[in-house]
Length: 282
Image (cartoon, rainbow, N blue to C red):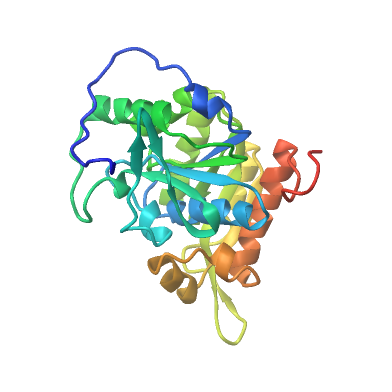
C-alpha cells in the first residue's frame, strides 16, 4: 500500500541506536554543506549515479525533510513508495538507484512544518523501516547547516565519511568550515571538499570564475582535508537536472561528468573500494 503523507512520528528522547538494516550496507557516505544553494543535492545525486554507472548497487536517502529535492533531480516526482508489512520499500530511480525521500510521500508543493523532534523521529523510524536489500552504497543527502537532521544522521548511521560541498564565495566557505568541524566533532571522516559552480567555460574556451577563485581548494588545505574536484557551471547540465536527468549517467564524457568521475575515484581510493563492481576491494 502507498505510504500516506499524514505520517506523523512522535518524539522520543535519548540518543538513537543505528538501525540493523543500515548495518548491512557496505559503504555509507553523506553529502553536506554548511550553506544552502551550493548544489549539494546535485552533487549527491551524481555521486550516486556515477557509482551506479560503475555497476554498484546504490541507494540514496534524502534526509532534507522540509526541502526534499532528490526526487526532482532524479525525475521521480510522480513515483510512490510503498509499505509491505512493517517495511518501507524504496522507489527505484534511474539505473536502479533506490530512493527514499519525504518528497515521495507528499504532494508537490505541500510544506512539511515540523519542529526538530519530529524530524529526528521521522529519520529514526524511516531508517529502521526501510528495506534497502543488498546495497553496496548508501548516499545520504543532508540539508544545509549543522542542525537536527545532520546530527540525527550522524548518530543513526555509522558513516564511512562525508563529502562537503561549497562554492568559491567567502560567505559559503565560512559555513562550510563549520560543516567540516561538525563532522570532526562527531568523529566522522571528511572525505573531502567539492567546489561546485567553480567556473564557467565560454564557447571560445576561456574560463570565467564568476564567484571567485580556488576558495574550496584553499579551505581544504587550511583544514587538511582532501580537495576532490572543481565542478564547473554548465547551462546544459542545469537543464538536465531540472528534467531529472543525472549528468553522470547521461553525459559522462562532459566536463561536469568527468568531474564527478574524479570525485568518485578519490572517494573509492580513500575507502579502499574497487573502482568498479567487478573489481576486487583493495
